[in-house]
Amino acid sequence: MRNEPITFKIKTLTPLWTGGADEKMDRIHETGIIGSIRWWYEAIVRGLGYYVCDPTDLNIRCPGEVNKKQRKEYCLACLLFGSTGFKRRFRVSLYHPEFESDKSASFKVLSGREHKGKKGGWFINSGYSNDYILSVTPLDEDFNSILIQLPLKLAANCGALGAKPQLGYGVFNFEEKTELSTARFIESISKISSDEKLKKSDIRLRNKTIDSFNYPNIKEMFFAKIRFRTTEKGWWKGINGLKQFSSLALKNWIDNCSAPISPTIKNWLRYNNGSAFWKLQKCKTGELAKWLFGVISKDGNIASKINISGAYKPIKDEKDLWEFRIWGWVPPQYEKCSNFNREEVLNGLKELLLNAEVKDWQNLFGKSTRSFKLNSWREFNSDRDTKSRLSNINDYINSLVRDGSKGVKK
Image (cartoon, rainbow, N blue to C red; front, top):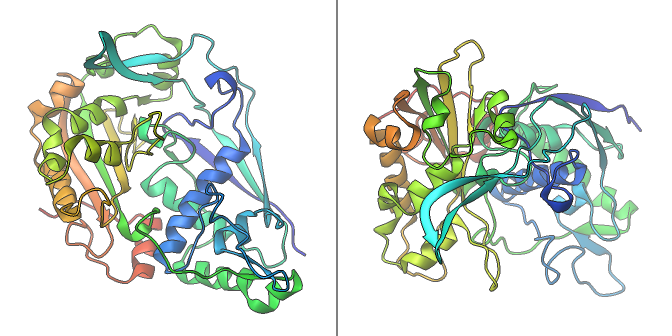
């Protein structure tokens, strides 16, 4: 068995968050990184037409219910990442400088709204902002690192890694160790899930009807990048909602050449002038808002389907150039509204980002910002895609991980 580890140097572009005790991040938690990679892996695998269980649901997670005389069943995600009765096929180790979590507590980005007389907003923590080493060690002879590298590269190019991506955390980059392709990814999946191999472990592949309506699928996701330029070093002081400029947690963002703009953009899209892109839907406005942007309530939490990154430097040598991402998953149906129209939502969002005037952005970021531009919009089998309409899922994934987007079609 070849068990030499493969290592990646990860560079954070916005602070990483993997959680910790008392909302303090004292170290990078391996479970947070593994869980995030699994999320991207599942989205890819569903897009390729395979079934993936929900490991958080006691009723449907692996192993599947089978007759006692039959072998236990595991889906493709659990065959790689492990589940009850089946261990993970790789080990992850993280190496980073020691750091002390921010003892000054989080800072609050004000929304401008009030809740029962209290000023509303979002609490942001400092997170982890240094480079770190991610090491992956195979624990199975048929494990191929592309099974981790491809979803990791997709997250680097299009989304984020770790927890709370909806609040701007987790944008990063790294250099892959081998050439990435969807064909090699599928070939590697076939090796770890062949019936001959699974018989040796007395298990079998779990196949069910694919229900992408309920879970993230790469075919139903969109990825947008917006760039802008600044005229002053402290431009971020003009961001609506940022009042605690002396916070050490905020300083950690700024020292890392990033800025926590996500709450401001999210508030604009959900409640203010930017909300027109989804409010035209013939659905109950409050319920649709919770479904798209998330909610924490006594009746159960709903994860945000639209994520907004912090601002970061996309090109090291261009000091006045900044970028942020708006990305997420919009399913074709919304179970509480039969009139929901996905195309209208995505058309409206792209049009907003493409045609918003400088004054609209400056109302959010301040007068020290300019030259806002939708740099790219990527989406499967869609004319909205700014590179080209790709109807073959293999070609589309290859395009995303090779990051070939240049410019915007109007």
